[in-house]
Length: 517
Image (cartoon, rainbow, N blue to C red):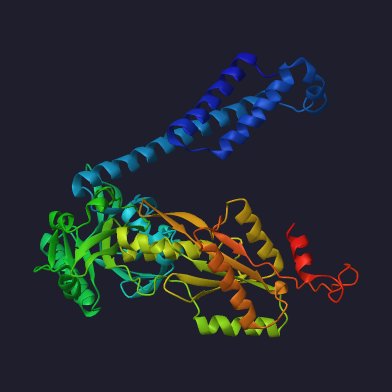
């Protein structure tokens, strides 16, 4: 028979060590838990009245059951105690590795390892290279001392690649965007009172002179590359806090030095854009972009600055926004527009023409600049192209501020008319933010449906669209849109005899007087 006091005490201690191990050491011992559960079940079966029948039926005839029960409880207690002590000792050794390594090498530690080579912790810098979530920055291949290794299992195999201590290893990281990053590492032992408590992998590029030389070479390479592009571009030097401009940009900005300090950038920047420039943030593992205007030899021009923090370093590049054609979307010519209308009519398609007069663009160009207006125009058409008309619209530039849309299907024509009537049309008006500045793009629209043209010719349909646009642009017309309505020819066959008129007998003069009355 199991003595209840001893069995309760043993079970309580075993359970206590199991819980303490989980809370204090973040470890569990499966064997101790199994023995504890077996002992607990036997104990409950013996001492809970409702379970005594099962106890007598299945366990009552086992010889030396009391001794077996105490043995199981004792094993559960001993194993849980050993597990707790072992895990606590290992945790303490790991803490010593971190503490001693940081005292020795400060922030140059890339990896902490236990005495048997198990990776305890990897620095953020190295972890970004090994496990970057962005597709273009993900690791393609890893080479260590000219040997290609399986980088997917590198966490488990770092120890074996550094076979000798205090000897630099060359790590070459090839990313998906074909950028290669070289890093020297060296493995060192960590001791406490002459006892080996672990290893660390250090960034071997700790020499100040070597780092400065490499950074100087990198900056020189940047400048030469940007200069060869023959484009108005620059990169930001984090050490000097200057923008390093290409020769093309120097000439465009009318500056004499390729080093442009932050104060000078603010002086040549449009005053309205200073809050945007001063409020910019460089985000980790993420591209961020802002746009602002700089004073150039042709007036204020728009520039885009892209930045991000990758592998612990800030990268910032400045370039002029290219807006020569007013949009990065594809627009057909007027000739292509006419040809497409002819092709649709010949194929007997049901389609609509919408002619747009973007009358707000000249004012935007005058008040905000041509580049600003063209950015707003790009966003305006991008929203149309990706909105309800997606895959159903073709766009053509037919004048300075006139554009034509060919819209497939009568249902989309009717959808646009519904939006016109409800004042929710994205063609009629869009409020667009360009770098936190609100731009209102408005259009006057003339529309015609192919079914409403009695004469199925491209010339007739296009003329009907232009007539509708002319009506929409008339200041006295009540709406900013006009929909072509087919005109029905009414032929009335009057009979003078039915009207009671006989010019031979009646006096025509008297008849006209009667009509006037």
